[in-house]
Length: 178
Image (cartoon, rainbow, N blue to C red; front, side):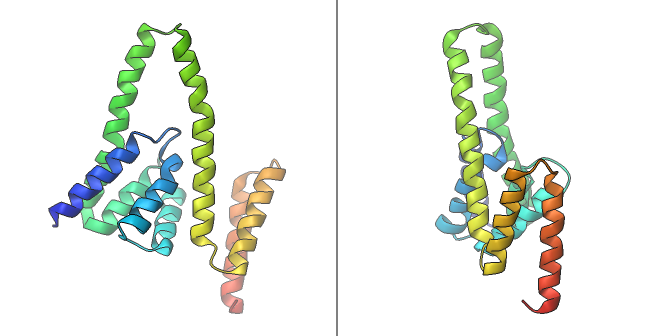
């Protein structure tokens, strides 16, 4: 196994781990930029497929990192990518929780917590935009993305309905040769 690739995976995902405010999905734009644009480890399509698999599989959203590591370097890549993405943020969270327990009423701590909310929301919105751009390769895909976003935003229906409609449209388009 190429140890330099494993080292690059470890450095890339450890750095992303420390800025993953809001979870792994919050760093999808930077993850995409690192994996597709900068490193050239995979194409937009491969990234989108791995992301889709990770989102449909039961378990945490961080599975996309594990799948990327596995795709690039097999089982050792999976282990390195997963540990590099989880360990630094876990240690940071543990340290911060100890500080919070000691200084729970501090004003600066409340300000910091309040400031992290819009950052997390912005990072997650950027993730949605990056994934939409990575998968929208035809007019049908753009229409499905726009329709799904509109349904989720304007209705109170479960997002699984949007997934079901999108899947039905995709299957129909495939059989119709669109």
